[in-house]
Image (tube, rainbow, N blue to C red; front, side, top):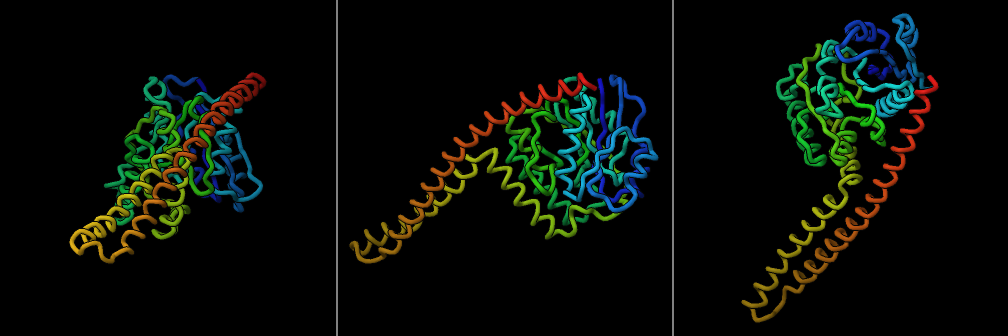
Length: 318
């Protein structure tokens, strides 16, 4: 059983040693533990520090491409290197290395394919009251989209089995956290949340410059992932809402038609027709999107099988 701990890095020369020194040397049930960093176009000495720490594998991206791309490249590299379990953690020492054993325990026992560190966002001291509320609302919205309970949607401290990693595809350019959970819910992959503790922030977040920035980036990512994996539900909700709204002026028209002897208020009937027609059109878009989604699932299954064959060959060559 091989475990690879991957760490996406962008200018983390100062914090990487603190993160690395907390990693466990041995975990019961794991035969090999290796480390891998994905240098996301750093301009400092991140790679030099990683070599000095004797990190097993170093992947260097030619320029800064963002956390989502670095995470995806890390998964690919870990799979190439024969990882049975992949743990993703941040380089800023937010998460505690001693919790890795706790994080992968449900995977080793066969109870989960993906595990996520639950920071207890409703009581996290490093979050402002507004950020706590936004995180709670955001996690609830993601759980509705994924169809599974999600107490902490944005935690980057995660573990994947080899099979779950093979099925994980990242399309976002911002962050992988929301999209991968919605994927897991859509594919009915067992996910477990593990309560963890975090270290005090070593620096300000690079993903969330402000509340407005967080909302501007996270909401579109949630909507894109939702429409990609739950298209019929999404468009049916909007279409049905428009049809229901369209019934309001229809009732108004009928009321005045009966009470006033059929005189006037034709504008209500026109508005009803417009809203109901648009609502049915959106429902039809949802049906088409659902058919496209079925085709996407078929392609993803084919891709999963191809990746399995490719990475199994790579593992045999290593």
